Length: 123
Image (cartoon, rainbow, N blue to C red; front, side, top):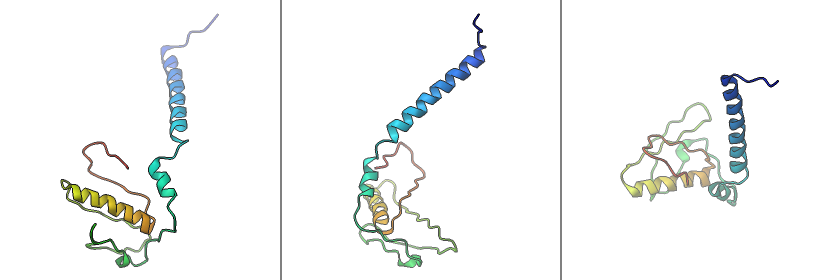
């Protein structure tokens, strides 16, 4: 004679099975291929520079922006704050260029964004 599982136990088992398949789909669909922007960064030639010990030595090409101020703390962590005029498309393009410049010249590979009002395109 088969035992009937209580309704709560059935849902628990079903949730576990669904979670397993969602996790497996996520791992296999996202874990196999490298996004194109990551592949491009991995294939760059040459060794990128590291950040200088003296942050005053950091240079940004004049046409895309300028360093207005810096603060040298005691730790090795560095945070760069890029400010812009949100409604000016040229400013947005320059931010993209500044991020690319820091990635290429100083090996910066982490970028955080705050204040987005809609979905962002990370490319």
